[in-house]
Image (tube, rainbow, N blue to C red; front, side, top):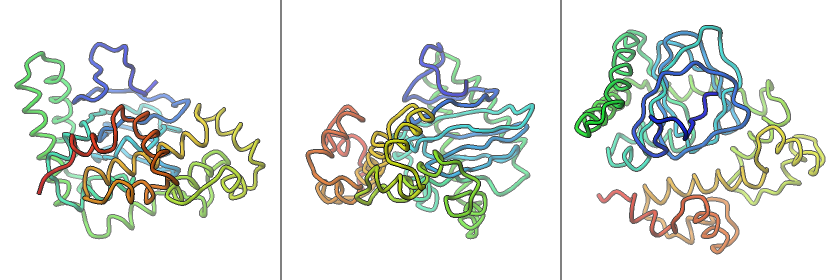
Length: 285
């Protein structure tokens, strides 16, 4: 299974990682507060990411914010790839260009547009995987610097038309190709900042609310409300780390209908208060 396994000796839930994988379907969405880098040596993957289907092909570095629920739902034969992760706090501390950071926080997948980088990227990922299995802390620092440099090169290479290309790879609720559960995930991803209810979600996909809840729980292993709350907390994390917006305003703009509900959900998800999270992750100008 492609989901990170905390029993693996080389696993660190919030640390720098780089591992070679052979994919298998994920039974439910995964989410972890890290930036995830994928580099496919062969084959292809289809993710359900924040309610959208996104196909990733071989030979192109692809990155996304893994706090957005994501799930591998299909892949090609002989697919092999590297997965690398950067802790979200470390990613923010790099102070990367906005044309890279903002789309990631909006839940987009960014891909290297230049095909000629496939071989050098494959060599980089192989080196990172080898170095991160070494006990020397100095090597981890070098890997972090190399990952930052690679992301800066990506920000320079991204064409202005990237967003149009990204949208063309997404199968949304309105273009078809999604089953009922995926449609519900899409509704949540598109409207989580609104005062959304289970009834409204069910109505949007033409299902009775009770049936919608049971179907979603069976497929994703989590409730509609928990999935909705996760999107809202992830949105708030990005605002806390990158803006000076007041916490009460931030709570409402993230979709919560009261500051007490926001504080409770945030502490349950992040293990600290929103104020503490901002103090730990906010980058000073």
